[in-house]
Image (cartoon, rainbow, N blue to C red; front, side, top):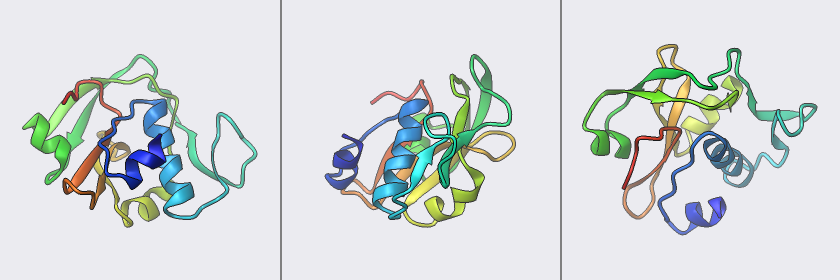
Amino acid sequence: MIRYAREHNVPLIGTCGGFQNIILEYAKNKLMLEEADHEELNPDASKLVISKLTCSLVGQKGEVFIKSPSLVSDIYQETTTIEQFRCSYGLNPEFEAPINETGLKIVGTDAEGRPRIVELFGVASGKCGFTTLRKLQY
């Protein structure tokens, strides 16, 4: 479903595990990292694109800084938001640059600069939001 949405310009929102799976699909099928994997599911994998966070976000609320231009910025009409998280895993910092430089842009971060929102640029509507946020509604 995620690959179909990406390849057919279908808007898709992923929260927590969905956010992680969107990144994994992109790494495997767009960046051609066939061994891209999730640490929770395969801790011994050679390319842990999704890795355990240094501090779990389960049940925490945090400020998210929204970059502009982005679809999320257009929808929120704000530069920051407070959101609740339910994740213990996220984008491995080793893969931030390759992901961000190839079309899946990091457009929202926490106070430490860690990715919390990504958007796929270059689809029919100009951009397609993939986010960890629960507030976003179409």
